[in-house]
Length: 77
Image (tube, rainbow, N blue to C red; front, side, top):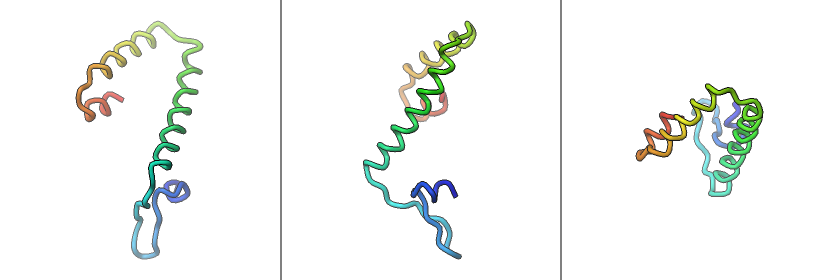
């Protein structure tokens, strides 16, 4: 229902759900919104970092930088 509300899919009675066509602007809009929400979450958490959190983030960042394959990158995230 949320995807239909966002215009990503449409449902047709007794036919199913279908992915709608979308253009470059739609993809950029969703990507930008996702980035902003993640940025807010990380900034909020970053105000009171714990030593263990910082160590885990360091390991995660190194893994992401070394990922050569997009599948490996997405598995890390």
